[in-house]
Length: 149
Image (cartoon, rainbow, N blue to C red; front, side, top):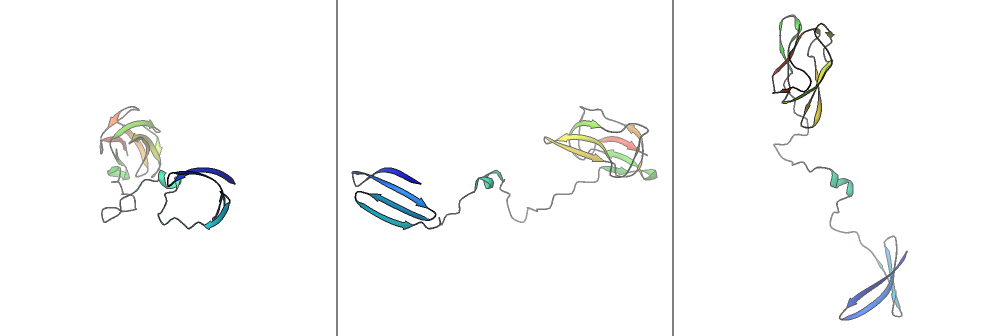
């Protein structure tokens, strides 16, 4: 694609036609024409998709593996126990009620923390004996949520 370009050089205005094909640039104007080969830019350019990626500090304090949260239950007799909040947040949804049977790993409630939905699973199979919270309740980390017996 050809493009007309005006520029000022040493106090004089010039007008040329520039055409780029791949890495070849042809400049024509004022009765002259010359071609040059463009070289790769030595400075690393940031691609648009790279801009969206957060920069994560590297070093001994950073681990690419996610931190493991403390188990969300306190063991009790019969394999069940008291299910506690894994972090501070708001109860968004309770999926089981008193008398419901649950399996180990089954999501029994959903809470919102840091603008994310957090699934809270039962650590062991059992029957829900008590539910201590309601949707909309603010809870602190390690606060009891329900008892599974």
